[in-house]
Length: 193
Length: 298
Image 1 (tube, each protein chain N blue to C red):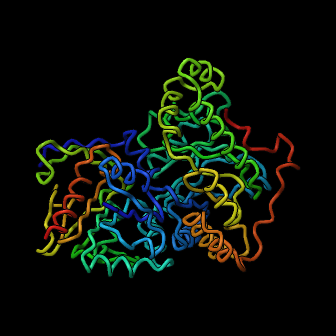
Image 2 (cartoon, each protein chain N blue to C red; image 1 turned 60 degrees about the vertical axis):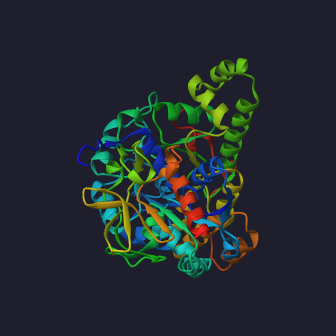
Image 3 (cartoon, rainbow over the protein chains, first blue to last red; image 1 turned 120 degrees about the vertical axis):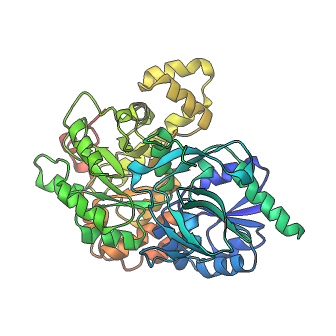
């Protein structure tokens, strides 16, 4: 399986190493041509305002929107979750707007409120997932077609909508590969359909 | 799910924030207006300070932590992380910055050191720290104290990239030496570098520093920034280089693009066109040792 990782800025290396552990081939996506022939695309954590601007400057925004709309599986973590949202509270920053979600940025506060915690995510198994939240966002509201996979304190922290998957935390930082595996299995399921 | 136990201020969340800044540019700003220009240009974070290093160099005097009011003003102006500098060893300046809810503290040789013997014990804090280093031993001593991110010291406020290059080359060379050494040699290397043995073992295993390593000190052009990326840095701090140049907004944007696409020379050529004059700068070779900042801290 060939998975692209948007490599403009952020935690690219970590996603690459988890995906390789799971036997996937990875491609750094820097230009529109890099999107050709991908089975899936990961939007890593980073600074969403920076990545949004670079997406525009390098003509990547439209091609990714088109690919996402025509069924390319896309998985966004943290910044990725923000970029995939239709609405971002109080911000007009550039975005892909693929998911019918409304997100709050830096929703838990500044860095001193960044945290890690064990969370129960039934979709990936019984064993709790150790999730790392860094100046993290959350999904405040979502349309009915968005399926929440993790809700804590009325906040959606992990969700999917058709070919799209988004996490407010950083599964690439923990060494637990179950979330990435879930994404790869989702791709396989979609292919089989 | 009310039984969730949240842990804050852990090594993982401190180092994690630095990981998220990779491939980005962190810019020195002295006003909320400059912070907005930096954010608009695509900076991943800003460093709030009262005087940029080249002014500290020119004006002399004691350089201290910035006015908390100014820092708060910058925090309110942007949504990206805000960093600020504390003097080497100045525990209270660091505590004050932490109480301001700053996202990262730079224990910096650019400010006048408060303690010539001890660096801050950064493990005691919940806020992450970045520290300067000239070689692997210095980097690992700071990581041992709890630094969540390292940067080259370079020679701040000069606009001369030569020292930053020297420091990243030295760190890489030292890492190579650790990686290629046999297990038996590692304690001797730890002694020679003055580095904690456990961290030498980690470097051997990871083949790199256990934390993110940025470039800093003398970066003035898009090509300078891209050079530091080519040499293996994870990202770049630009101090005086942006707001001491002719066209800060344009230069800031150009440096952001050069870092994101550091292997694309045609793109660096394109963004380098018509930037106006870079900061005038000062050649490090003409500086007396007593005027060099990199020698502060150990």
